[in-house]
Length: 324
Image 1 (cartoon, rainbow, N blue to C red):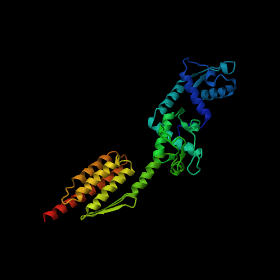
Image 2: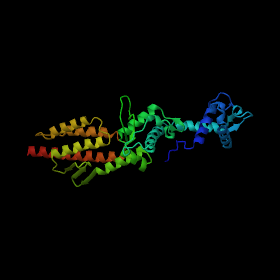
Image 3: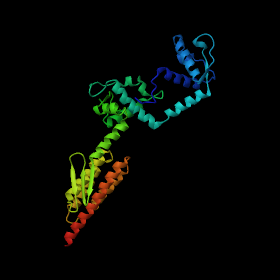
Image 4: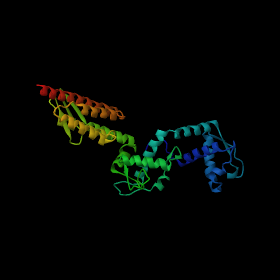
């Protein structure tokens, strides 16, 4: 597991918290008993923490006699720099968002809350996990719920839902989520990108001469050439709506289908002008502007160009036949 924001050593994690606590105190050389709940049973741990931080050059020990009540120390400039760096790490909004998603996936796997086991996890246990903190700072309930909602939408987790929650109230890993944990180090972005790449490979663009063939990966195939029919063009345009939907670029897919229907009505008329079909292609280009994957953009743009060319050929052929 490569989660640099997770403190796997409890002693080191407590040392970070002690250092931050000392910086927050008003006095320059604070007594440390307050951090240890003024509990004499914590004296041995306190001595270990002070010894370790002193050896690292992060504090100077000013402890006197009397056990825990007499323990005091001041933060060195190096210690203040360490606290500042930790605060900067926590301020990484994108890193924090990715960390909570990865943490939830890993936590569910470690809890054996999976589709395979049939068990669900409780969010109360999440707050107790070391994975629920980002450089020592706990994720909020809202952060965790938003992350769970995103993971549910990408079908990596599921579970019973409740109104007012983005994610499931008792989550578990789906089979896909378990693959993400085991094969992608619990990185949902890497997993989703790999799935998109596989899907994109299923969308083949084979242009030879004046023939264009599209396979959308769901057994739908459209072939167009110089004597392309209106039915084939409509099938190709419907295929584009499906492709955009697969990559969550279709927005209101009903709008796309309505544009295809208008194009179909024009192309099946006695004298089509192709205007409705070009309006559909303009809609596709607009949706494509939202894509973040250059490969998807290039592939769909190639198909839009091919449809546009075949549309021109068809309209010209019909007009020529009518004039003849």
